[in-house]
Structure formats: C-alpha cells, structure tokens
Length: 307
Image (tube, rainbow, N blue to C red):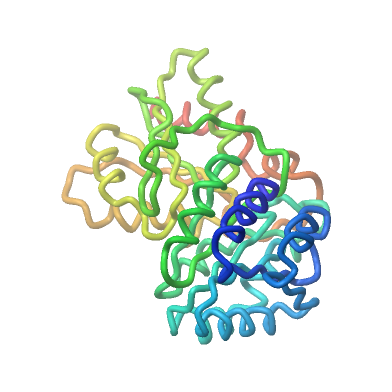
C-alpha cells in the first residue's frame, strides 16, 4: 500500500505544485523517488511529529495541500492536540497518513501498534477517516483525499498487501463497496484485514455457509445507507477491523444500527477486545491470537449464523 501511495502522490505532485509531503524522519526507502523528483515539495521535519503537524497546518492555511507521513501512532496520537487545534478546528487542508495500521509493526510492541487510531480520529469534528484495504483502494483513497477539502486521515498497511480485487467503479469518500453477495450473514470490514475476511468467506463457503462481504474504505463519514440496507437483508452483520472494537469501525456501524427502526440486524464486532497487546510477534501471529485470523473469523461467523 505505501508504494502505491507514494507513486500516486508523485503523480499528484507532478500536476499540482501546491502538493507538499512532510515526513517525520522515516520512510526513506519508499520516499526517496519523491524527494529526488520534487525537492521543493518535500520537508523532513525530524522526529518531531507535533511540530510536523503544526508546520503542515501553517502551510495548508497558506494554500498548500500537505500530506504528513509517519508510522503507527506517531502521526496521530503523538500529535493529537496539534491535529485538533491546528488542523481540524481550522479545516486545514492537511492529509495525515499513517503507515502501519493495526499490528503491522507487531514485533515492536504496543508503542508501535495502531489500534485506537480510527476511534480517536473519527471522534474529531471536520476530519474524514479512510482505511483502504489493498493497493488499488490506497490509490483511489489518496486521490480522493487530495481532492477533498479539509483535514483527512489515511490509514494504510505497510507493504506487500495482496490485491483483493474489490470493485472500484464509483469509488468515493463515504461509500461502501460490495465485494460478494450472500445469504446467511454479512461481513463488513475496513482496512488491510480484508485478506483475512476473504479467506474466511472461502472457508465458510466450503462448509455451505453463504456470506456477503462489503468493504468500507471510509470509516467517517460512514455509509449509513449501505448499513441500513444490509440490516434489512441480513439477520446478522459482522464487522471486522484490526483495531479496538470500542469506538472504531464496529462502533460506527453500531451507532447507525442503534437509530434504525425495529426490526434490525444483530451486530457482532470482531477486533481487539478493548485491550492492549501484551505480547509481540508478527502481524499474522497477533491477528490469530486476538481472533482476527481467517479461521477465527470463520468460526465466529459460523457460531452466530447458526444461533
């Protein structure tokens, strides 16, 4: 995803000199082509994410479209006050990019796990929150936030994520993207956990369980119309996110469901169960430990679909 983001940003910078990228002293392996081609549209702010964010806000208020770039929690939680006061409050044209959502940096411990970011960022007024699921969606989301005025958050994986071949026609901020139809339940997901979701669907199909799959590349504004439609078609909706279940994507879906008239679908949320990971390991390992692997997603769907 990060390579596709950089190549897309380079295409945007080539046609718009107001595009400016600010990094927090990392990403050099993938950012080098950008800064070599656009040295006047690039700044290394150093390991100072709060300064980076205020700097970006100032540039944005002077007419620039500024992308800040760092890993995990660093461009979000570490710089939260600056995002709130300097960017969101002023509706500044700052695009905050996190590389390494969820457990991407699992072996580095909880300080590098981004498992509260969606909840925190969607709680800020005037902030659009996007979590694409594969490189193609990362490209579309980058183009979308570039064109969208105001402060945006783009949550990416790291690199090597497979193409999920999610539909791309009609991609826009705030729109869910149906991937597969089904009969017994609906799997709703956001972010790079999509590979596990699609494998879970395959495992369930082999057992005769038919599940719909819907990608939500936008967490805020959530596609309330799509959720309402799904709630009328299915008895069970299952949300999957590589994130805390409190306040994130599942929480956003729950808010929509809570205001629908009865009857409405039952909601089951799969994610990190309101805790920090006290263990370290690869992303795949931690997903399995905390119930987000394909086999554990399938087991949970099997359980609720038969309830």
